[in-house]
Image 1 (cartoon, rainbow, N blue to C red):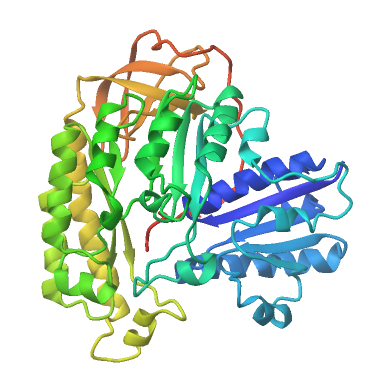
Image 2: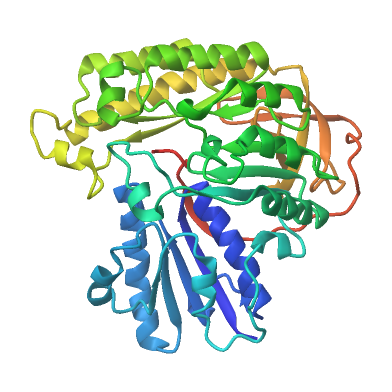
Length: 456
């Protein structure tokens, strides 16, 4: 049987794309292997949001150059955000080890390049739904691309303009995913709450959440990544009302000062953002707010940075994805950084990043201490180092020990230890009833590291 290997770098959308490609490759008769050296078909799912991601991809391509020399029949595909719709030609001479260049999310185009498929591939891809045993928690993309023009972000240049999937198609995929064993679904988009504005009738994310919530057997429902400009009161009230919707909302702010938000072209103010957080917390009292922040954006002064630091301490986020600004070719911020009066030195970016991380570690340590002695519901995903690992409603990692198989089940765990990155506890009761008792398997997608969807 022919074999494949997928190597993934980047955000949750890339991970979702790779999961969908897994199912499609298996559908044409290919089987997975753990090493590229053992594969007939190798796919690198790339990211260009940060320079460090591109460096990792280039390093991997260097190792594959040797593989191509020793096994010239191996087909190598460079896929994802490094390969935009208009830049494929620049790679052909620079990367001779690559046979095919494919734009992000185009699963069908990757499959079209599979050599000697055992089975035909004639239908549109609803990929992850077709895996016999999907993961416990599955990402289902609902909208591709981005219409924003944030100063620092290359995503619109790589993934194109927004395209929403039809509501009925998404609901059907979710039904099939859950029917095959998944318990949690995360609806995914670069700006997920912009969903539906380009569809007939203009359904919105609240309408979709309502429809997916009715999926038989579904235990939990989440979505990411949101944009403050699209977060409506209707959506907030829908999440608060529906029991399967989890009390966690990712709402990137990116900077804590209005001057930088204006330079970033984010389209809101700090005051508007804080008002939105207050309205969310009023509707969902136990919600965990998470966010993304970029430090060292061109034009950021010490005063601007201090405002961001103050924001972290004031809002008290459950999680903050912090990144030092990285210039991306073709963006307005990259042009700004060429001007010395706007550029922030590398060392200062790193100092600011570390200072924010220390502040957030203190915040999350204190927030997690509130769970000590509490009993929480944990959707168990897998076993790791002899302990079961899962997440509570606020998406905190929780560990516990038990001899039984808890994969895909909801455990009641009393928290006995807290830390900034996880909680630990002891099992105190049987699982909350779910629609079935089947064991859920896992799709393995090798992932080098994960970047939050909206570093944009």
